[in-house]
Length: 153
Image 1 (tube, rainbow, N blue to C red):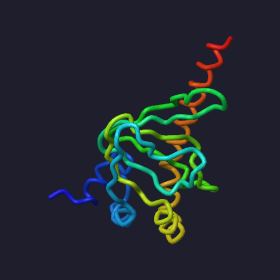
Image 2: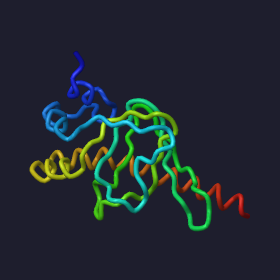
Image 3: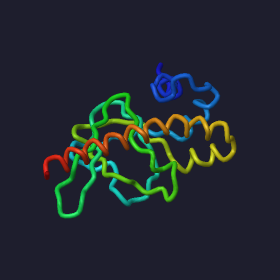
Image 4: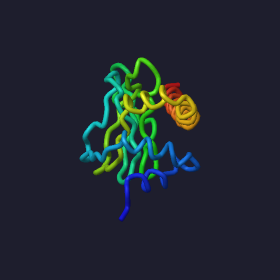
């Protein structure tokens, strides 16, 4: 039988993480699903979770004023969606929309922040892992903006 702890420990995001930490994080996880076309989160809303995508595909989008939404990046099975839960003021910086039926593990941000406060080594480990995700999203955003400005020129 597959346990949530085993599934999380096998996810690429948690690769090499101390099994004790994975055991702690299981208490912050829940299964969620999003129908195609539904929003997973909206820019400006409170960022309560991050998501480990198990199946499906979602788009990260930003909505410039007076323009249609611009797709920044797509995420799919094995990817992580969301980092805003980690950094105050804990508000989403983008929209995320399911492009197809998407199943994920939602990791509760308040639960995670509490555990990180109790164990700063865990906090550092998560911050280290999320830093690469934040950098990747920044790069994807820059590339999209360069495309937009290249089209306008």
